[in-house]
Amino acid sequence: MDGVSKGPWLDDDEQKAWRSYLLMHRTLKAHLERHLQREFGLSGSDFEMLVNLSESESGRMRAFELGRATQWEKSRLSHHLTRMEKRGLIRKEACDSRYPEIVITEEGMAAIKESAPAQAALVRQFFVDVFGPERLGLLGEVSDEIVETIGEHCATDCPLET
Amino acid sequence: MDGVSKGPWLDDDEQKAWRSYLLMHRTLKAHLERHLQREFGLSGSDFEMLVNLSESESGRMRAFELGRATQWEKSRLSHHLTRMEKRGLIRKEACDSRYPEIVITEEGMAAIKESAPAQAALVRQFFVDVFGPERLGLLGEVSDEIVETIGEHCATDCPLET
DNA sequence: CTCGTTTGGTTGATGTGTCAACCCGAGCGG
DNA sequence: CCGCTCGGGTTGACACATCAACCAAACGAG
Image (cartoon, rainbow over all chains, first blue to last red; front, top):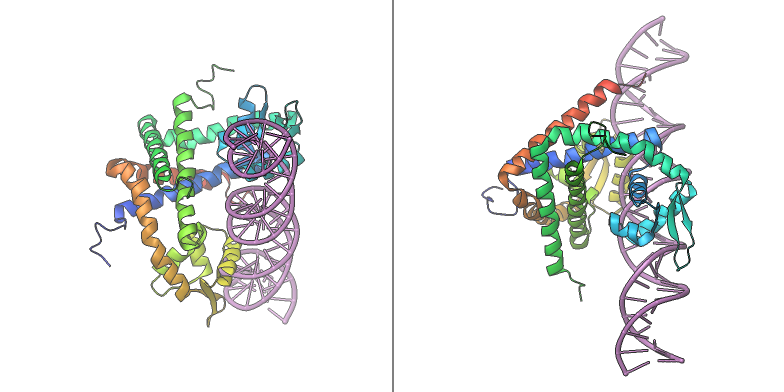
């Protein structure tokens, strides 16, 4: 089970880095979401929706805009928006030209105004500051490269599986 | 709404890096899991279980060992193991000293032997090789730092909320 | 006009994660 | 012996994600 230096396998350093990375992401995500949930009663998904809505100035967007912004698929979005509506964080409001608009409620606005600074502080404390500016910059670059690489790959080998 | 340079908020570069990172992780994870699902009918969770079991030489572990290895909470583990048992990937086998042992089946073994190299190849292609050795090394270091930082933080401020 | 396709959105079934409650046997103070 | 708590594990209810099917308006070609 060795001699595979050129095979698909990862060598020890690579394995270690990959697993450290996975653990880090899980830990960080869990920490952020647990905080959000306990302090503000919001899930990470709720937060993502509210961030996008609240950034939109008018506080109202069409569902597919939210979908584009978050990269969620439409059914997930639809399900989640109905749940959020039940909890009073948003409203679906009929507007003139077909299809409802998603409007953030006062309650939703209050929730995000309260929670966003706290979340940002945690991201700073446990992510930004630990990386430091140089390494953070590198990470950003690599991340973009990876997204692009995967995008290219998908475009060339699964374009509509005709 | 500005003048918060020292506040909890992230500046533009930090925001950008953070969001790139989030997007990268989502994209990569989705890509890996979609592949795993389509080619081998395994979820990421199945894969994680099988990797740990198959690495254990005897192919059998107690549930809480799996829990420790994967950092899953026990109920999630229990649920998932019963589902995997239903699909024939593992068996729960009574052993002498109380509590069942989790055993990987032939089918489970076959699944992981087939899928693991393919997964590793994707990780190499879209993660390891895009980073390159130096940047990957840095990432591993930072990841460990972050995990440690969060660990310390939790140890000091939520030790048994008495 | 009409038919087929696309677009934006909903719905239901099913698989998965999370929380809290519970079960049960082991260790232990009294 | 009794009653504790504790560790390992299961269960049920519920939140969430994913997939495929569906729906209805809009659009475009014939």
